[in-house]
Structure formats: structure tokens, C-alpha cells
Image 1 (tube, one colour):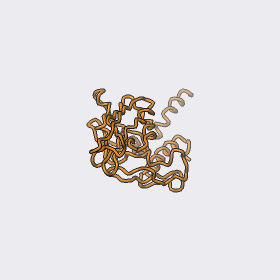
Image 2 (cartoon, helix red, strand yellow; image 1 turned 180 degrees about the vertical axis):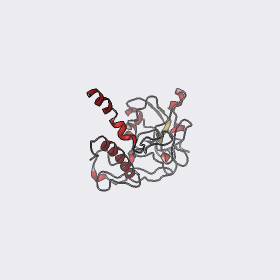
Image 3 (cartoon, helix red, strand yellow; image 1 turned 90 degrees about the vertical axis):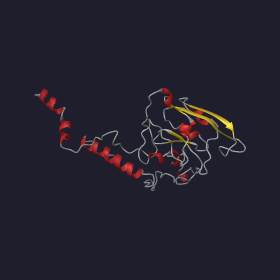
Image 4 (cartoon, one colour; image 1 turned 30 degrees about the horizontal axis):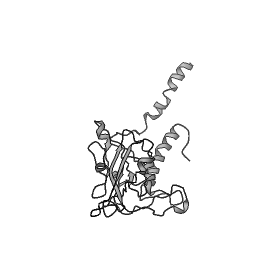
Length: 232
């Protein structure tokens, strides 16, 4: 008798879901929303006047634990400066066969030149394509990331390139919440700060409220079905 109950007991969860709506999604046609600060493919930003933010300081390459960034700076031409500083990033390469998307390069950058987009779905047919050059990383004349043929960009993702820079200060000081401490970007201007963990946490502008509602409902439903209760 115990063998029979054990056998059918293994199908308990299956039978429980038979009459319920399907929760799976037809990936890649249908995707789940991405978190506001998700780490994806990098972009090199420009100032609102079109000048490059990168000053060729190589701090991003120095802090990278995977050694996937290669940067070489060069003095700005006096007649046609590339960046507002004395130098600019003449060579900038990122090897995505090594990158672990830790975002340390974004934190180290003194000019907010390098940030990460939400794009993480890209594959290559050869190893050379995995090494992105400056011409591929630098935003276009409208301030949007360049799109490579092997990248799967979706609606609205190209405008989401500065998630980390919009957060509260790294030290977590609540007095800095809501204060803008970064420069504007080409085609975007000065981005509004993300909401923190105070009463203003639900930020409609960044979509973080809608994302939390959807993720919470998804996980709450799974937990209720398993008899573990909802999230707190």
C-alpha cells in the first residue's frame, strides 16, 4: 500500500497544476521584464554636447577582476578635442569571453563614461566578435547603444543604460537619496535618480514598481501552491 501511495504522491504537484492556467512563457518570443539595475552589455557614453566621457584613465581596466578590459589613453588634439579632459580613450576593448558583469568598472569610472545596459542575450559565431571595440561600445549620435547583428535587443532596452548610476550613494547614506550627482548624457539629458528604500521607493519613472509587482506575484503564486505562504 505504501508503494502505491508513494507512487501517486510523486504526481501530486503535477495533478495540482493540470487545471490551472499555464505560467510558462514562449521564450525567446516572450520575455520576463528585467530588473532596473540588471548588468548587461556595456556602453561608452557621451556628454550632451556629443563629447566622449571617457578620459582614458584606465581605472576600469585596473579594477577588472577578469582582466577583460583593455584601454589606452591619448592626449586630446588641441584643435578637435574628443573629451573635455586632457586625454581620451583612444583604444577601448572588452572581451566578453572573460567578462563576468560584476559592474566594478562602472563603479570605478570617475566620469560615468562606462555603464551597463540590460542586454545579456547575445552570441557569437567566432571568437573575434566577442571582443568589442570602441566603435561598437560608443553610443551613436542619438545617444543610444549600437546594435550588433548578433544581439537580441527588445523594445525600450536601448534607453536603459545607466541603472547603477541612478542608485543611492554606494555608502548607503540616506541623505543622498534623490540627489542627482552625475552628468547628463547625449540624447537623454540628466537622468532622474532611482527611488531608494524610503517612502519614495516605488519609482514609476524607472518601472521598478511594476517590476516588483510582477515578480512578487509570480513568486507568491509558486509559494502558495507549495504551501509555504507568500513573501514578506
